[in-house]
Length: 293
Image 1 (cartoon, one colour):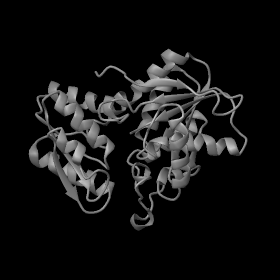
Image 2 (cartoon, one colour):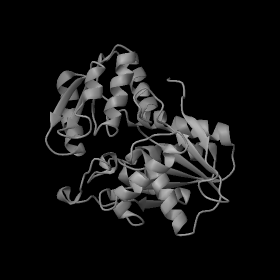
Image 3 (tube, rainbow, N blue to C red):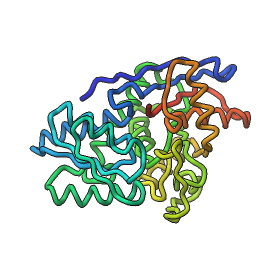
Image 4 (cartoon, rainbow, N blue to C red):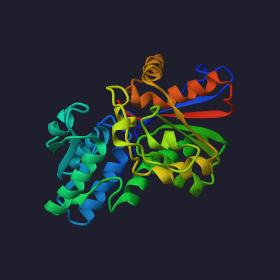
């Protein structure tokens, strides 16, 4: 398993009277907090004799998987929506094969399932047969935070796309018996976890979501771990929050003061915390996950 390289940055001056910790998960080679999960998939692929991993991505998971595969000399195929993100440049530079599909993230994942079967490759998608391996990889951040901060109650703010990190965090929190409220932060009207909260999970119409250069990783019409993410939020005593692009950019600029430089979407958790603080209802220790650069 990849050694943890995140940096816990105290930011007690962010909100007067509140202890705030920035969990900077952007320092992996791929710049993505998803890299430990990608390395977990690669380790399983090697153990099972696979020579290729196939994933669908809107960008960050593809970069993470391409990086992990290159480090282990495994072949990698990344399927991306056409015209999203960096156009596959990062993944291609690692030696990965990059395929493009029309549509959005969900279409890329569906095509990657088909490619994995056609190539006899490992399907490394978050909704694929190795979902539990991915969740275990994502959960390592909670163990590291617990070691650093101890068992005191806290709130953990997480950018939300598919809800995978929320589900993984909730599993580890329950195993550790650590009383932490999970707060998922997404794009308003563009993520079914956010729009469903606090009710039952409902997908969005495909044509209802609006993707921008700033909110891309936070947008989907069907969150692949949506129902379980809502259960995680509710079971932990947290909530789902929406922040727009202006709030993402403001949070990104604010974080530069602390020497951390995630993308606008990777700054979503800070944007959510600041929005909640403006409503005057933040108490106790706050941990904020910065998820990509």
